[in-house]
Image (cartoon, rainbow, N blue to C red):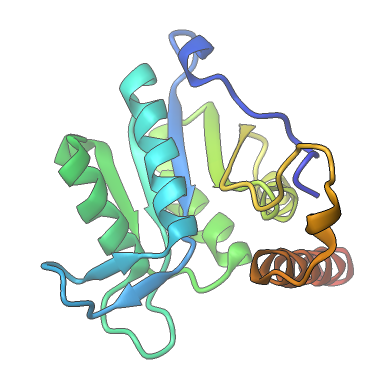
Amino acid sequence: MENRYPPVNVSQLDDTQEKGVIVVLGGGIIPETPREGSGELSDSAMKRVYEGFLLYKNLQIPIVVTGGKLLGTEIPEAQIMKEELLKMGVKPNDIYVEPLAKNTKQNAEFTLTLLESDEVQKIYLITSAIHLPRAMNYFKSYTNIDVVPVPTDYKISREELKWYDFLPDMRFLEATSSAWHEYLGLVKFKISG
């Protein structure tokens, strides 16, 4: 699943021709940690935000962060993503927050509603590589805007298998769980759209 879309070389992208926007999908938060602020992003979410920052540095186009309040949290995930982008140096006026989406389908619906009046011609869609096929399905089903997939947060190494790769390891269990989640999400998309 992670190989469906090739990695993007951020430094080679050029957005001078079309009005574009970067869309970063939420990837989980750890609420109310001892650190200052509203909580921390999960590893997956932080990798997505950082990829968005790299793209922003290169293209100088707005960023939309999308993600609502997760179960048991008071602050929308998108708000914490915005806080991280501000720490990285993104201008406040270049960040749009979509704070309501609770799943991938809503990420697409609510983000595209937010962008309706902006006449956007290109969306750079950032999420984990394993999640990107499903996210692309939803975004493409709701719009005719050109959607450019930007994968990040790879779960599986591309190096040749070694004997010790067959030993029990939590990373592989997590990757398998993520893969099943995405396969079931794709089935749901095919059934209900």
